[in-house]
Length: 285
Image 1 (tube, rainbow, N blue to C red):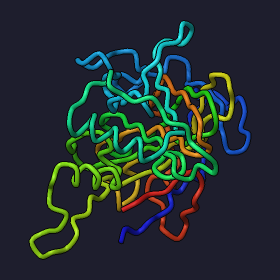
Image 2: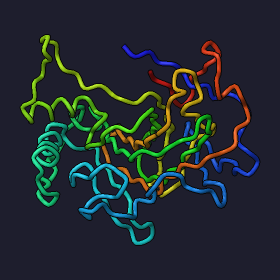
Image 3: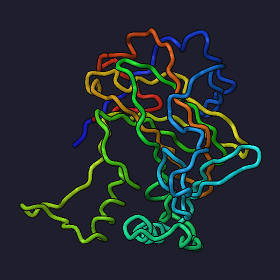
């Protein structure tokens, strides 16, 4: 069983060059990046296309049912996620799309869902949408900014010690089990024990975004240190996960930015375990 450790977030604020939050309401922070800040996340603007010209480069492939790559005249390209989709329909389509290779144009029309909608993507998996890997510095401090529109959602920062193969839902064990079965792969090992697909990240923290029908830029108040504790000191890469879930509905995301910031408080670098205090996220091992 994985042990969970809280990520310490007490201490001094960002360097003086960082702007003050425009608003912090119900744990959601509305704030723009510092002027001139460099986005370290490749293709975080979602404008560039993969070779198939169907999905944004540097991000999970879209399926045309839960995930769509849309264009707005004022905002440009963005990701639209609909969590009001029955899990059964999504799984059936994902097998066809990502295991059997069916074209995006074959995406089914969403079937109506019925209350209480606990059988939807919102009620079960959540609308996970993953970036590719981005390197981080040993001891580096970072802030993540995301443009969002729609109900409240979460944005996760997940850390890895090495680059691992990427695929659709590669960190969603339930979907991987379904894919394994669809491929006819064995579900037990040589000793007869069930083969379990496990999450591979060593670090995670999250912050809240959304809650408005208008585009706004969100972030977290305290910087994040993906390899700032002894248990995650080997983390060298992070991935960003856009994660809308409940209520079932439609969510939009754009302009995902990872900015390195100055954070001189040593307590956030390597805190004592007994001093840790859970705020927006946690570290997992």
